[in-house]
Image (cartoon, rainbow, N blue to C red):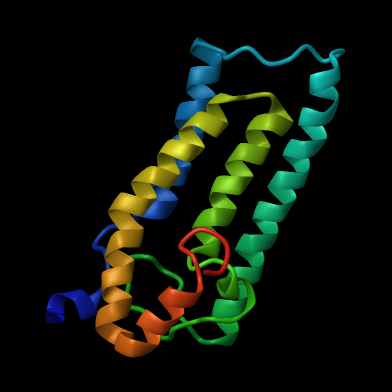
Length: 164
C-alpha cells in the first residue's frame, strides 16, 4: 500500500455530511412530494410506528456503544483522520462499521416512526454513498496501517453486520 493510504482515509468527513444531507433532503422531499404512509387507524400503521422507534433505539445503541468502545481504545473517531487503533470488540465484533450501520438504522427507524418514508430512501442512498466514498477508502487505510491484523478481522466480521 502507498504511504498516502496510511496518512488518512479521506480528506473530507463524508459520512456525517452524507447522513446529515440525507436528512435535510428527506425533510424537503416530504414537504414537496410526500410518500404515502399507512393511515393511522390501519393495522399496518399500528406496528410500523413502534417498529420504527425500536429501530431508531437500536441504531442509537450501535452508535453510542461504538463511540464508547472507540474512546476506551483511544481510537480516532473522525472519518477524515488517520486510524490510531484497530478496534475489534464491542459492536465492532459484529459490524466493521457499527456507526454507519447505526446511522442507517436510525434513519430507517425515524422514517417509520415519523411517517416520513423519504428518510428510508435517502438513508439507504446515504449508506450506499458512504460505502463508496468512505468505507472503501477506510478499509484500504486500515489494511495499510494494520496489515495482517486487519485482514484477519475483516475475515471474521462482515462490513455491515454479522460474522462470517
